[in-house]
Image 1: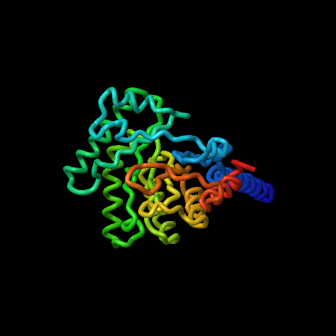
Image 2: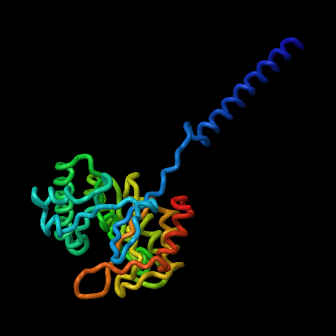
Image 3: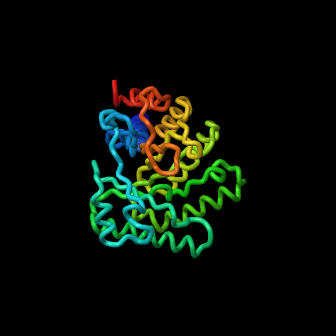
Length: 285
């Protein structure tokens, strides 16, 4: 009896040891990555134009993002020669942003369907001409919305906005490689802007199906064209760094009846805030 009891105890210990090892192995498989993960670098793009000797933005870690708009593509689905003009625009990389803002994505279902079809045809024409480009649509995925995104139109407004984005994304996401939400600054309330930006970036993440999200920022207020205060601009940069995969800084535009760029000012608050941000990223000493 004693020998039999000892054998049973030994067998139970052995089984308990095997279960313990199995438990630890399962926990490790769940909690630990199978391989070392390399952080994806935060991308910096710019499409900036100044007069009076602006710096070489490449030396600050920026890549120039080429943007094709109706001045090149026209106002209908682009023809072959218009696609060629878009592809001939100077580029520093394989990225191309399509900026077409006159096809409505709100309004009647017929209007939306027509606009979505136009966007699809445009992307397909460019993709067919150069399959190696990384394409994105400015301010389409998601549709920029300030008031509904921050909840000022109530729960139904927020639900409607998300539903619209789902509808558009189901048709267009397969045709793009990245998302370019527009997060310009219509009002001077910094806290509301952060809420607006977070809602739009969250929405972009929801519909992106894993594609990177690069936020368009403009260091000017669209209505007055005044530059943002340094603290406000820095908060925008930090918000995008925290939530997105990169930024595109766009501008500039001086007041007047015709387009002209703003005068470069090395001491401008927005630029000094940008330099602080770039130092924190390790882009400049």
